[in-house]
Image 1 (cartoon, rainbow, N blue to C red):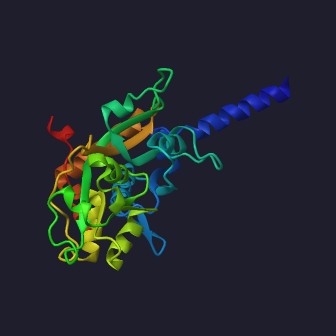
Image 2: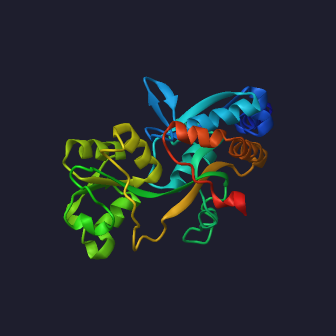
Image 3: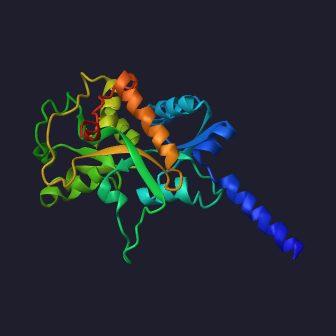
Length: 288
């Protein structure tokens, strides 16, 4: 009986250790924030040094809480739901490490209320909050090989690239009855697609507006501009991104959300986006 009692006490202690409320974070002196690996300009590393929009926002939150920032680098799984499971409520399948806060999470009511095949909430253990950017899709092109790009119809004749299994990839191979499929090439990452664009094997790349602006500036926006065009037949053309915590730790979300609001009001958020040559589009949430 004594051994069982000790075991139960040990398990209870472990549960307490795993609980990362706002008070626990401040007492520990550090906060663990999950960011995506190799996801410039949101989160990436240069010579081992973390950089990016999400990294700087996470640092601002850590500073406000007066704690040290520790980053948990995530490799994207098959779905966002998988990423939320791995980062927030269950932990990685191997090391079981969990984050207190996750960056770059869709802020969408329909997504937060998504149900599985038996009617259960998919994201029941996650609280999503604090939108800090409205994202959309964009196309960057070579001005030399594709001087004008105003409609998708140009890809009936010009090769275009996209990240494999991404929304742009599916859109390019299926829109308008698959008209652009023969001229669409998929790549392991946006960076690989952009490198291929520079080599001259494709004439354009479609991806996140934030990524396209970042790479356009990096390569020279005069040579690789962002096209002004729409995307007919695409169901969702813009959405908000924010943060997530475990649903049990709402106090942390209130504190982090207050930081985002303060950064919007004093211009720090816009300055961070400008540092990476990305236009900030303030979510409608703040004007409601």
